Image 1: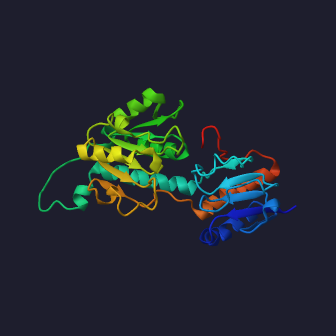
Image 2: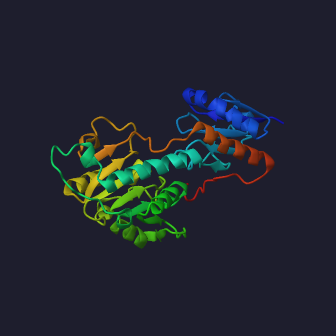
Image 3: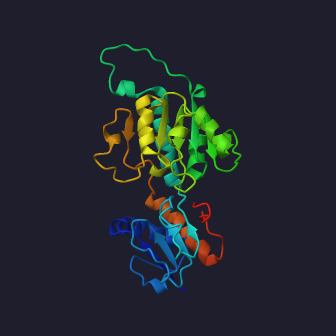
Length: 310
């Protein structure tokens, strides 16, 4: 029997994903019909991107699962009409991209490279950075992406701690959790990396009150979600020197409006949501494996916990 797979994303993404998805589905040995135009009542699986137009899943009577193209599921997880399993994207290419972005920016701030990039203007300033072992880094969020970044930084010798809402044990990594653990993670963070999902429990995790726990001059990297930061509080902390620099890849409104004060702030670096992107080839393999599992009656990979929101 043919498995009908609806690709629910815009035309540009269909042009990008069609060939790698077909290759991956063929390699999985599946009999399938992949299309962006299946009638709802005939669909078995939806490959889902937040930019598409489906908001009511009720007409999809045969639907077995929704397979999200991105790691973030905040736009669909609370949809009351979605009554089938939802899988988020955990993709090797996405993970490696995030590790490289985080590592690059941690090293940038650790080594003080901005001073040399912008020029010393003839001043021979001999500022030697500490070794990585003497630089304390905290990573908020120990999911797939946070754990990979924290383990990489620890492997480079950084004094690395990770924080999560519930207790975790990760070899060679200091793991903190809960409210007291969050305070401890902030208090030690010369460089703070935000890799939490967007949930009611994580929104505005950085406010004036929590930012006050950071060491003077701390650096913040946010490749996670724009909703994690109270923007007004961060701007105040930058002006006071509590935060020395913020490198931001995600924002509450994207694209970031031209009039936003982040653009002109001398201690803010903006990257346009490029820290990590789903790679069509590797993402297609993840999707094909989940379709294979679904058709074989096996558990799906990377299922979302609706109560937790990720």
